[in-house]
Image (cartoon, rainbow, N blue to C red; front, side):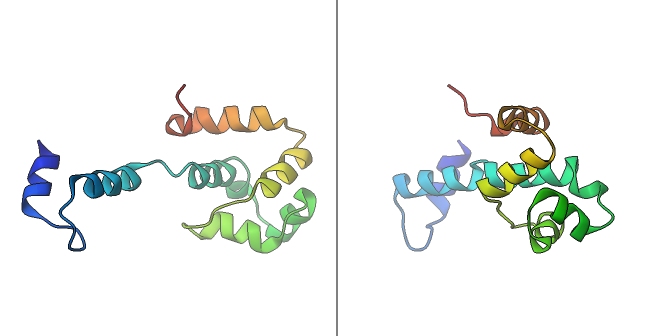
Length: 111
């Protein structure tokens, strides 16, 4: 019902196509899994760090990456960063993603 009201009352960027509107809504409400993984890293490790450089060195990542994870709300991480943190923290990748899913259940890919 809400979608119909939006569609009847608004055109988006000059488009009045239901398919375009549905596609746009899909991307707006889609979970940004990468961002949630960054939030998991921040909560599990970075929030406890008192020295960015020390954490960066111990985890084989850049100090700028540590700052970005902590402060940049649009930062997206790389697999290499995740892998380096897991190696340094003696953590399997599978455990990393399992814990991230436990913290943020919305990132789990449904089968």
